[in-house]
Length: 95
Length: 149
Image (tube, rainbow over the protein chains, first blue to last red):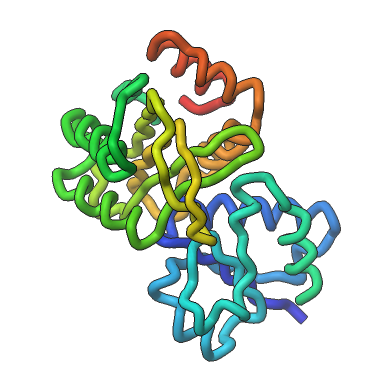
């Protein structure tokens, strides 16, 4: 079954675009692109949806409210290049 | 992205808000952004910090909503002394030497450019070139070499 993967950042403009690109690249390399439907937004618009478990997987490049922290994968590594594989592993574990 | 040649070299800034203000002022003057951009990008940095600690260097990538932007532009600031920023995602305090301020007219656009920018900040040789560049032309050459134009 296809899983929904929401990538959020502060503005929904820049870093979520990069993070989405990195995740797509990785999933393509392991042949799992078709298992995921990609979505992108800004955190302010998504807090309640994330709280309600509207998405199967959530990756964030920005700080999220503590109430939803446990539901969100920290995706900053996708931007710094430090510890990237750990993020990919966390995503794959949810597929 | 570099048409207005907004490259500020070895500026001093007391804190990150002053650093960001200097780049935003230039972008406003060139016409790339609206006069409301500066206060929006400064506030955004407080709410959603944009510092990134790569293996090589601390950078910041400030930006804000497309409604404050007239046309796509990248502003570069090299700080004389590192300035304290907070990191995206975890809010840790990091020391920043380079600010890459983005003015993006469309949401989700410019993926290729953003990916090149991210590849650049992760590349030791390019960062070294940016740190040692003696004038704005050398900065622009380095950016052009990695495909940011």
